[in-house]
Picture 1 (tube, rainbow, N blue to C red):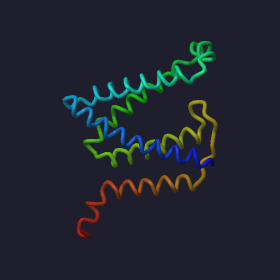
Picture 2: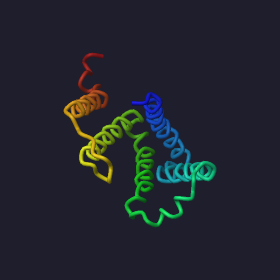
Picture 3: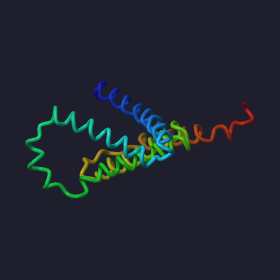
Picture 4: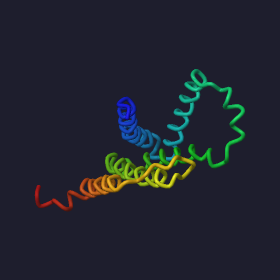
Amino acid sequence: MNLFYLVMALCAGSMLSVQAAVNSRLGAGLGGQPLVAAFVSFAVGTVFLGVVALLKADWQPVASGLGQQGWWRFTGGVLGACFLFTSVFLAPRLGVTNAMFLFIIGQLCAGMLIDGLGLIQMPVRPLHWWKFAGLAIMLGGLVLFTFGDRFFRSWN
């Protein structure tokens, strides 16, 4: 696996935590409105991507292929908006780390289903026992991280 891609993914993951914290503060600054904060954040991101796409993208194949897509291929934006709202809503309630930990577990479970079954027209990637073991370790870490203070209160 390319080291650059691994570092890129790690950096993108760290941006999710920063984004949740920044957007939750935006929501607090907008009268405690996480839905409005998610909308503003998505709008700013849309403008940013629009400018970058106008400058960098090859729009020739887009014009001919846009109308040929199945409706479900456009749901990614809705899913992204829902995720953004959820992170803005949950970060101040659960804490950024707990929310991100749960998001990661959810991502891994969904990713394993998509990879293992080839869902959403993705190539099938075999699921081996060590992938399930890794997920179990992550779940154990989530339990310790989230509820460790209850389990180990007497140790403090």
